[in-house]
Image (cartoon, rainbow, N blue to C red; front, side):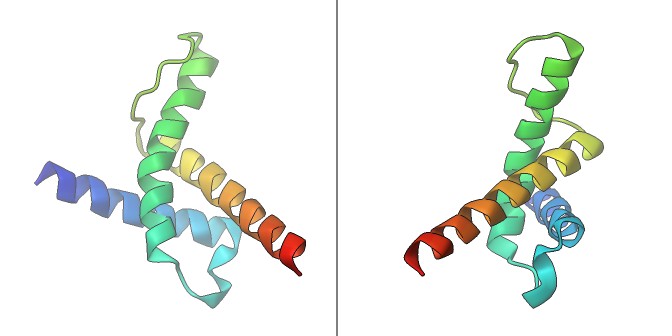
Amino acid sequence: MLIIGIILFGLLVGAVAQLIVGKSKSGIDWGLACAAGVGGSFVGGLVISLFAGDGLALRPSGIIGSLAGAIIVTAVWSWWKSRDVAEVG
């Protein structure tokens, strides 16, 4: 049950991150939303631990840290995909 809750939380946070970044013009990419939400939680936890002075402690974070991390993951993913398209085209 916990895993389902984590996945659903990741989907929600990742979808909100796509809306904030502006990537959702063609709809929400649910695969990216799940990856950005779950991965963003750990990225947010890493950033928060760095600011708190705990060093590089990788840990899950709360709602705000998860959203901040998901925004970072979504923005980096969007930049990476646009870079691939520019190299090919």
